[in-house]
Image 1: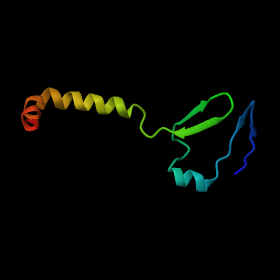
Image 2 (image 1 turned 45 degrees about the horizontal axis):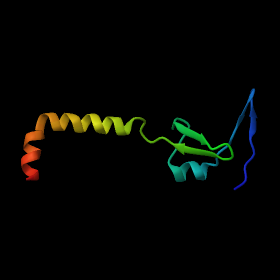
Image 3 (image 1 turned 180 degrees about the vertical axis):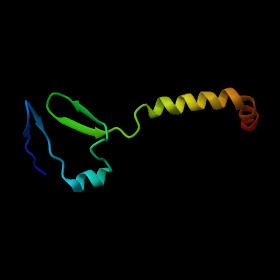
Length: 75
């Protein structure tokens, strides 16, 4: 698919077709990450910001509360 940018005030906007939005399960409030290598632009949806940090915090809490029991189950 070939797209062109659209003027939006002093900036440019990329219009994403509804079918692509639905395919990627994103909407106007989904945060998007933009990355470039100097030649290409990659746009990726961020599913849950800080998801890994939330997981690590939950794991730490479980280990603190039930670490001994989990250790015994692993033996």
